[in-house]
Image 1 (cartoon, one colour):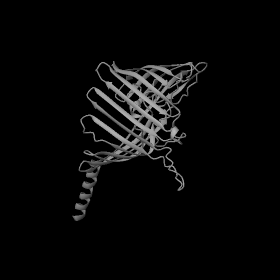
Image 2 (cartoon, helix red, strand yellow):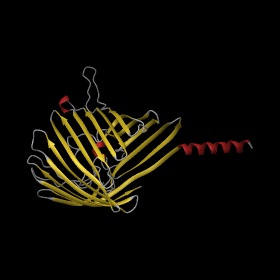
Image 3 (cartoon, one colour):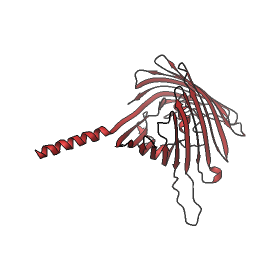
Image 4 (cartoon, helix red, strand yellow):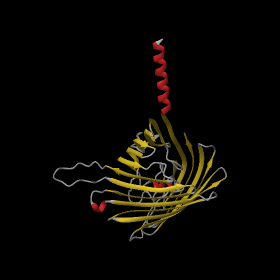
Length: 341
């Protein structure tokens, strides 16, 4: 009889643990046909991540009681057109690999590889989420990081009436000789804060990525605002990246609007290189039609016009840009399908 009681108690304990813990498999598969052109050449083929970056991952949470929780997140990028991973063709958790401790009152402490705090505004306030032929160039102007490794992040709790924020520090992990000054190359510090409540969303971020010398340190600043009127959601993104070697500033106006069973997306962005005519302008328009809650077909077209000192060309993940000449133009279009799971 006692053995039966022990077994029942063990089963009850296992059931309790299962109720307090969860693990989820998730991902996105996105692939399309794209065509990109430059001044004298063009390229056609399959693209990946035209609407959302293709990826898969695992995430889980354990309730520790008293408002505390432990969680993990592992996320790997991949190219659906070839089946290859994003890290030298191999599958690796390059997008995110973190472990967290969180409190409902105090917020979250997160360690590992994660999105850079200064990247998120350029993602959220772009109608195309930085993806495909229409995605903004505001996050790849002078080399600001998209993800950072060896990062320690603190995020405010979600119970602040619409206010949110985070601070982040990533170690460059450079060796230091006892007779030399500290090598700070690769160190990154960033902060982001914002307010999102009802139709209004506004946020700003600032950060610094250390270079091999002080002159190569990259300073990153950006801000965004969006307001949902129901029939249309306009958004404005401002971003700048600068070092002693130069500065590029982007201003982009975008919008999304519900249309039938899908969403219309459009943007126009101006990119200014300080003290130079290496400037460019980009236009994009697209539409995503929802076949279900998880599946969407989409189409996007975009065009870049360069000033005399610039030669930006449109490319997409899975299909490289064909290149263009100084002062030339570039265009691209793609149609694809995205499936969430």
